[in-house]
Length: 137
Image 1 (cartoon, rainbow, N blue to C red):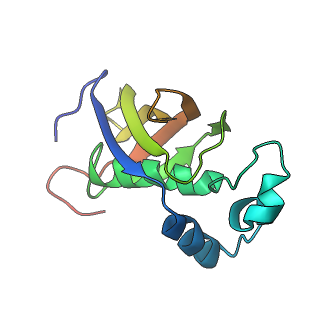
Image 2 (tube, rainbow, N blue to C red):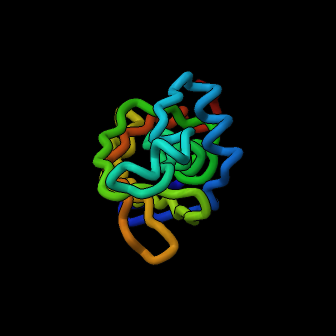
């Protein structure tokens, strides 16, 4: 695969009640700010918020399936959570290649998640290992 600095990819998904319930069950994170409307209504957010790592998982899907794509392996991810994500928000996860280390087969990418109104809710950087051309990891 040929990659270049500045190459971008993105995908969008709307966060649902089911996503939050399933993520809570999978992760074991039943923090009431995520799963209890009565509790969450009394917080600074006024309603339930999605798990931060649920939003981050959209980056995993983007990087593993789109850019750099199948056969790549996550090595690192920095995260800064900037705004809450609510049920019904459509999140666009995007990545842009910032640096390529061809000798090591490593890509460094900027990663950002935005809401439907373009508000940045999460930002960071990822490092991904690419398989050697024609081989599996």
